Length: 359
Image (cartoon, rainbow, N blue to C red; front, top):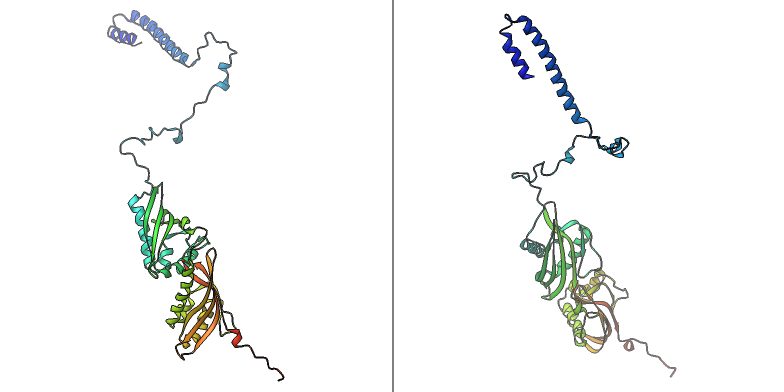
């Protein structure tokens, strides 16, 4: 086609000399050009016709159902490579909260420092909003701020300070755990107590806090109950007697268990709580009593023991001596032996009325 056009252009300059020949040639050239263009279009259109040579016109391969329509790709069809996720400078995914083993261990020190304040509110704030605390000396799971605080109201009276003896740390995506054995020194008594622990930490409000805390006594030391020897049972009387010597009714009342029962020597009213027990000793301590066991009979059970017999008091305020019968039943509560039941009575033969005969 281009060649024809070029020839026509060259001949145009000679049109005046060969007009008849020129007109005839141009007519033929235009027919040729039209034919070439038509053939070109027919050739291009054939590219869109399936090659049916050797294929039956009734073949399933040519049915409409076997053709997948062409559709535009959505953003979900585009591969991660096309999105440039692996190109240098691509935006990194947001990092998950991470923590090191050293930082996990430091979380225990934060909790221990909270214990040192003696403030149960500060300790309870080291736990998440919906924690699970399974404490050492309480059967009740603590699952919110109020119940966690309630536990530490009592525990902090012992002035505990802990240290980890053996710990194992594990770190996951957004969580960390620390489990092992710790030991507490009770500042109020000087006692040392070992226990097993598990802490699970998560981040809440941007701060790592205790989500789960399980603390339990060393099971081999329990041996079906807290062991105590016969002489140690008698020694518990001395703790109570020493409290009498302070002349402080609160200290005497604190020797009794939370649900202790006192049937006192010179009162008809049973005392069944701290307040009523304290009330009895407010008056009794005015006599400045000091006791001594004259006869003792000890029984030891599982986490309880009993001492029953006869004791004698010397009243420092008057110098008078008074004998009485006693029963102490002790239970192991809050890591120490306390008086669960105390029954004291005067010697009955000295108070019985004598029979008088007619003679």
